[in-house]
Length: 332
Image (cartoon, rainbow, N blue to C red; front, side, top):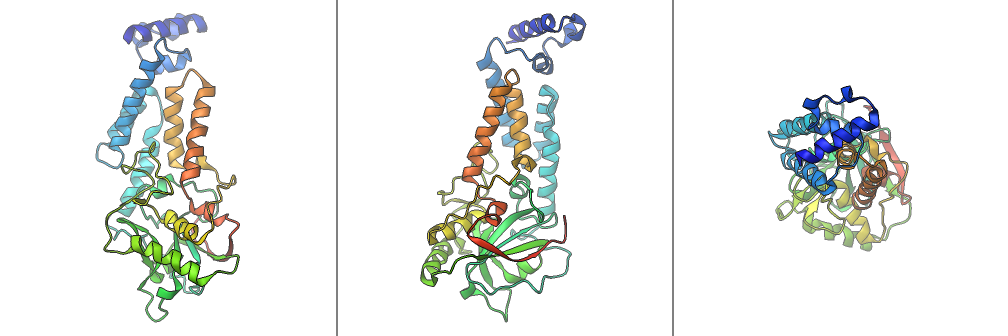
């Protein structure tokens, strides 16, 4: 393979017209090859090497070897993945020691938050309120409130005299689970969405009872996350999957069972604000450095797949099935 890279670098010298730009000791540098913009002689070998190096990153995300893996890739290919990894690490550290539910904040409780509508959807955001090391980092933050977490209220379970009882279906560390009204009053930012149309109670009860099977705190035959195998970003969990859960997917399932598809897939959401986009962009920029068209097509295809499979809190907020009944944003 070394000979092929030497050949590429030599061709690059001819193209730029100045051999001084490619000192002999750098002919074998991956960054020099990328800078040349010239297609490798052996494209398959180049892509296989990049894939193997990126697989090391995927395996290291969330472990002690994460920083080293990202830094190694950056040094080899001239990317900025370590920056995205640092953001990932901050999110994980902020969550450390939590009970597995969405964390509370230092802000006063939102005593005016309503719990009076069966099937109401609750979404939250804010940097102090991290429900998971992956979900906060992955979710785009396009709208005021930086919303990424969600739950749906089962009013039959709500007790105004004891707001510490489980009444909101969502996802926690084990997968699908519950939160309390107290949990939600202590979010940083929060929004309550009421169904825009009249609800059939028996149909809604059926949908909520269906999710109870998974949310049951004793049911642990599942996992939490956007991706299969924890953080394999090329294995985005589908909506139909019933083993891997995240909060807004639970909300989507309740309403899917009811008969509404509440995933708006709105074009108003800017996926480039996601940490996920940063890794994907850098990966494809290296893999297809010689073709801006291939690079952009690959990025677009990945985001389209993620957009189809992942249900974002912001996508639910923009769904035509809901009206905003309450909102309090205390941190931008």
